[in-house]
Length: 416
View 1 (cartoon, rainbow, N blue to C red):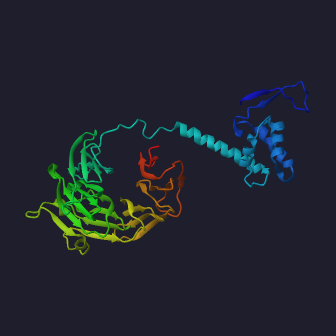
View 2: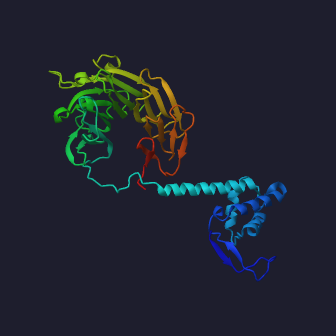
View 3: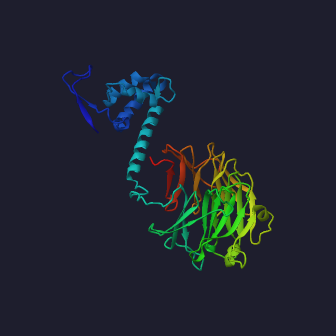
């Protein structure tokens, strides 16, 4: 415990005696030991109402604990203790303040021992895109047993102008392709999202032209195979899921500008609806034909007006067989049944959610949004989050669970 020498002696003591006063630059919880706390407790019990005003507490600290504040710093400390804001501090308020100081010190010490989630500095690579990149995803190679590995595949980047780049695993540019709308002759397209469908060798893009374009990528091709046009709203977010059993249908999840969620299901045997058909290089169908079930091997389920704002992220929660979607509205995150579209759980956040992350084994959901908070939820208890993390000063745009449920990394809008 740090001590400083003071030449002033107490008036009641021998003037020739030197008194050791403690260094008030240290926080209060580091200046008090157990015996001094006992003396202060007895002093509080002797006071009327078992409480002290600022002057009385300052005198008690000086006499009983050799703590003497010579400036106005104790004013701020006293205000932090005085929770009732009545000018008096009780023993419980003093102890509560000391406990908070110990907790803050413990959190600070634990934070210093944590390793940075990304310890190395980023490497800047030329993207070869002229417009902002709206999707970076991994295109895995599907093995005969329908399993995938992070060691085999390509990294895909897509920009708003429809330019798609293939990258190797060590981020070397392999080739560039373009997603265009065959119906536009002058005006260029504007792609909103891209999703890979590796089990059928297809890449799907969505655009502001309210269409879906399915490109055949087998044998290093990039040919428009199926096009669904005239959707009611432009699709803003997509997610694709397929099982290890070929007989089970694969699903393409869609979220659009109207807050609607759609699920397109199809079987993938012999590449399903995306196999080459003699004499039909391009299968162009209108969305209403898909709704009516007039397109072979396409089944559609729609959940209308699930959100009051456009869908920002959508994902398939396999362990619950549910569709998770989020939007910037009060019904921030919704889990819907993939079989009939009924709402299972609704997580309400006043300012909505921009993104979420799932840990399916531990059943944990993390949400982030414009309120700069990271909320951790039990998916089965949507009423209130388990905990809330503070610290960001701008909106959170991406959440990632690392090493299972042991850590969650949040990325905010700015790079500050």
